[in-house]
Length: 241
Image (cartoon, rainbow, N blue to C red; front, side, top):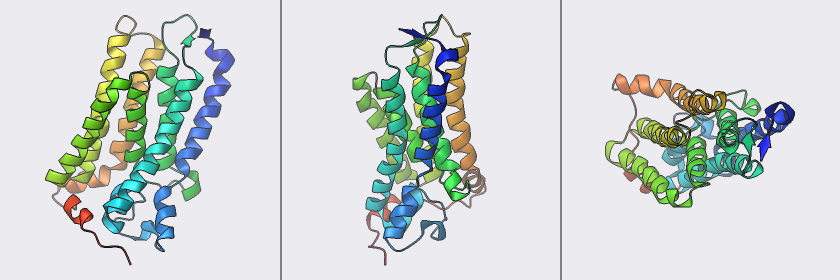
C-alpha cells in the first residue's frame, strides 16, 4: 500500500507531538519523590538512570532504566504498527523505517528537553536504547538476542572500566551503526532518495542529542575529572534513608 505524505502529514505531526509528551514524563523524579527525595538535588543532579543507581542502588536504577526505555519503546511500536506494510508514494521506502524512529526521536527530545521541567531533563540514554532495541527487533525478532548482547556489553564495559557516560554513548553509537547498516543494505540502490537520506539524518540526530547532553561528562573525562560509575558499589548500595 502506498501513501502520500502530503495527504497524511498530520498523522506524523500528531505522533511526534504525543511522543514528545510521553518523553516529558520523568520517572526518576517520580520514583525519587516516592523515596522522599528529589533526584535533582542528589549526586550529579541529573534525573536519569545513572544518578538514580548511585543514589538509591542498582535495583531502583534498573527500574528507572526500564521505565525510561519504555518511553522509547511505546512510540516506536506505534510508529511501526500504524504504518506497517505501507510505502511512500512513488518509492520503495517503507514508511515504518521513518515513522518509528521519528516518533522515538521525539520521545528522546522530550526526555532531554521536557517542557514540563523547564527543558531540563535527563540525558536520554535509557530512552534511546529503548528506541533502538525495539526499532531493530520489531521487524526481525531474532535480532533481539543480538540487541540484548549489545546491552549486556554496555553494562560489562561500565562494570570493568567504570566510565558510565562513555559506555552509554558507545551503546547508542553501536545501535546506530547497526541500524544504519540495515538501512544501507536495504536501500543501497536508492541512497539518494529523500526518505532514505531523512532516515539516516534521524539516526544521526539521536547521537548528536545524546553526545551533546553528555558534553560536560566528556570534558571531565578528557580532563581526568569524571567520577567513576562503580556497579559493584551500586550492587552493595544500602537502602537509602
